[in-house]
Length: 311
Image 1: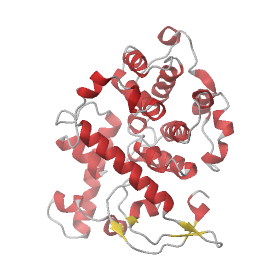
Image 2: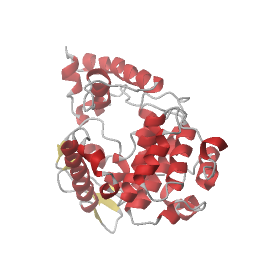
Image 3: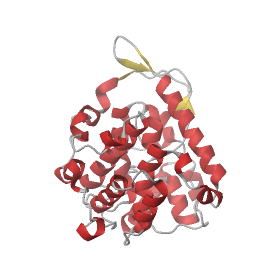
Image 4: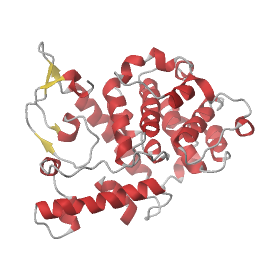
């Protein structure tokens, strides 16, 4: 949330140097988060916002009345869905954890069940892609049933289930009601329609996503998360790559996500008592199975029942 706030206020990692295109729910959540940081200022007798921003996760966790979940329960925008990809990219080797965290990502800014389940379902598609499943498997109307174990005890809501069952498969596209609006279900449906009808061409499909109109850039961004994981960099037109802003930074961040994700996956040693014992340096927020909020690394052995985070 600190980095989201930096983007919103200062243009952190923005391609233009300023933030743009944020939805109302995202703005409300980031403003609420900034207000809640005053709790930390009082708790630790700090004087500047910068001091608060750089508090460690371990330190923040000690403050009982501080909560980073700032999304309102009725927020059904597409903001959480469009920022989803790093989570399944990091955790795809452990599908159940990946999908759990995709859902937890949403309430930071969008607290509705619709948004959480849209993130869980779309995250599952990306996870399946990275684990080598075919496009036919990804687009199967039975994808959810075939991967039901990934979703734990809490199934998808009926609105997302309808999309997972193929409601987006409309040959007419826009003329048959496909719209890339700011509503999360419409955005999900539009991105899946583009992937379903892209004729295996990343270039043509991105243009198709943009030509749906409405919230076109977001539709393309959501589609790009799944299509990018499926087609890979080699399918992106070279002239697009040449003018891509901060290309080397993006490549570096991608390599970093891959490396740390592999490290996290290989580090836990599962013993007969079915507990995690982590004995190497790892981000503490990942040990707690929560979305990264404050960065910190430490060395510690942490016994934890494997299934406790899902029950």
